Image (cartoon, rainbow, N blue to C red):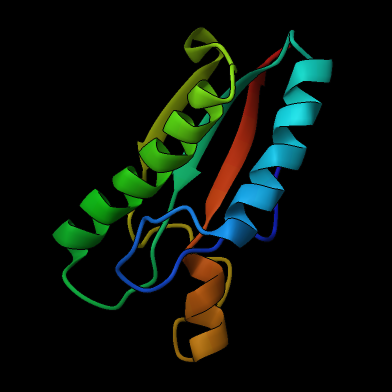
Length: 111
């Protein structure tokens, strides 16, 4: 389940107002579907050190996880993991492609 507007600034894991808006809509979906368990996957573009990008992607996924938990989504329903520069969805050769790759995705792991 990909939500297209959870993209982070370069070298950041800050939850911005735009990300908050998207997450709040997703929270409503999760509350209506309380049988779903979700994996939160974080990614980066290829700018910088790969090891640091892996850590950054983990922090992005964890920031989203923490926000969901603060908004009363049970932590037992959620997992999070960073994947760094892997699994790109766009070319890292353009600013727009890099922006798309700095993302967080949700995967429904069980119903």
